[in-house]
Length: 389
Image: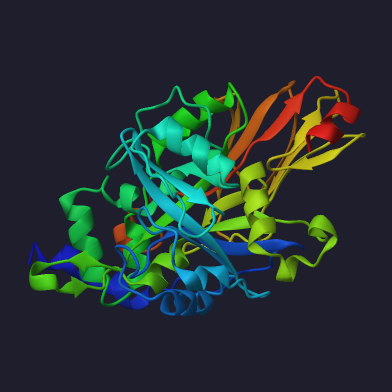
């Protein structure tokens, strides 16, 4: 009977734990949901671009960043439908690790190099936006002295899964045929090294944080056989980037914002990442307000004695745990649906929100649900801050 009890708990979870599926909640005006770091059959993935876009639409996403390894010549990425933006990109392999070059032109790079600094500089020269990929997993990033990158993956699904034990992987494998979304959620772990390095970098300059799906839907087996696992759809339902364009991005309609507009917001840190599989995070609020300004993720704001940080999670979620960091030091750790905390002074402020895993085999474990990009509070005047934003 001993081994049957834990197996029974896994099966019960698989049949009776119901997750949000494709629900998106109530987005704020100008909020767009998408997935970054996706591979297609043009590289190491298993799906054609139309198949990948179809899965993304089924997951109620509105943008996708395609990043096949060392190529940017998929002609279909040139199409940018008004209601679904496709960001053309490339995952570059260098001597120092991998990085994503987003928004680069087709057939870039024309003269590839294995030197990280050279390729980062060339990506920017080509108009690209660069993010370090899985910096603490396979092919870890080693050129931390380089400053020519715009951001980094804080969450990378493939890297996070590799931090699990054999038991965790076995539970997930049993769950997958019954409840693939719960199976993926069970493997979620907080990427502590990434967050710590992010804080270290933020002490030097603004660095945007993103979550990367690293979706391949392909395990290459023998004789050219490809096992389409895990499939694109459950991956797209797990962790998503919520881009905050505002009600009138660059004077236009956020619902039909182009890939260029979305990419600019990602570069500026006007976004947050959420594990929407545990609960839809659309409408999450993370802002600093005072008598002179209201600022959100990626913004700069002047410090004033009456400035407050507000964090509000979407209604309907179970009681979350909210952590607030100032310059890498935790200043708030509270179980609450909202916070309204006075700011102690200038600094780099970011928030993390946690929810407990549902079901018997979730062990009631706190799981990272949302992490925001920082808000930069300085002693500068409002006029200088307006120029920075």
